[in-house]
Length: 163
Image 1 (cartoon, rainbow, N blue to C red):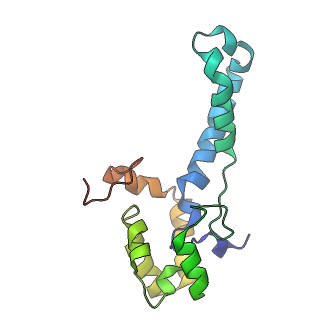
Image 2: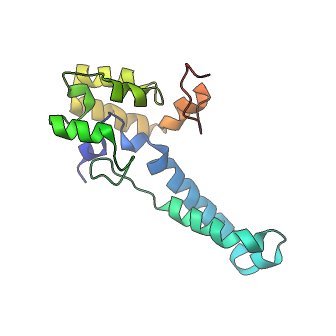
């Protein structure tokens, strides 16, 4: 897959997404640990595990191979308004649109507050340099959930206005 296919229409970089980069690795580590501890052979003898262990392992297995892709429609909401709009307007990312930042984009940026800074950076330096900067963030171990943890929004879609 070409590297720029890891840029979502709204301007996120998939290489920094916990769903694509952090959760699969952590789920694989958990699967390896649980199996190496022998739970596959004796879980049914541990009170409380017999009922939940198979579904727990299925969830870990599913998480371990997550790989959504916004551009082909396999990631994000199936009827994503931003994807439809960007495709219809012929822009690669919203930051390239003459109507940037619209209400559709502002709605998602409330959930990812750093997007505005990233969008302005994209406009300033262009796709190739912006992409290189995103890859460098990923190489250093940064991911989007870090910003949301600092802001106290992990697991919540509350905006700063609602808190």
